Image (cartoon, rainbow, N blue to C red; front, top):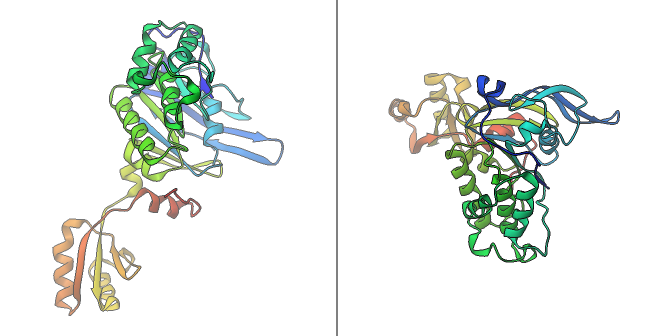
Length: 320
């Protein structure tokens, strides 16, 4: 579904969101269906002006339901949310939000350009913005072709073009690379990077850890409806360390433990992972060699976001 509104966007507002620097804030936002299903459970998050915020979690974690509440499409059971300083679904703020939630919906026998013209008239947007949006997503060359002839990647790009018609302050993109082939994923990620670097605030939901790690300034991690972490990617990944491959391994582990503390040394797949700054590599190597350990590999090691997520939840498998 492509989210559009009939209100006109004439530029940034000086409302509460402009004062706080947070375009989106939620407090204990909750959505229950019946008495047994809790899709979103007391989620409190904030999206700052000018950042690309990654809403990360496995399929079914509650990401789309949260986004639909933020857009006023679903009423929360409890808790509160503000978007650009107003309650979700407020006409004035919807005019400053572009959203692509779930599958883009367009008229199959109209061209890409004519589909956007329909949306532009509905939103009260000048027609000149249609071609600007098509150029932004690199669809100008196929703008006159029927939507039914578009590849999945082109359909996704047209959906993003629709969100750009109003030149919104906030872009909400729900799994924008879902179903795309590797080339399509690459192109979509490049587009999101460009949007984020050109002054837009982007709220991006994804179940792909590598995608969030590449694109996002901050991350909110959701699992089983609950927000379990919110921080920068670097902070979530934590302190860099060292990987050591050595023989005999147990002797290396013993001496590394004496040097750094036993709780800073972990054996993983025939190697040692040391929680120590990479600048300490020389000191570690000297200590191990002096103890009669043969060191065959010693290099900096940074935890990936995937390792952090699995550590926190244990239930996410990234598409490979």
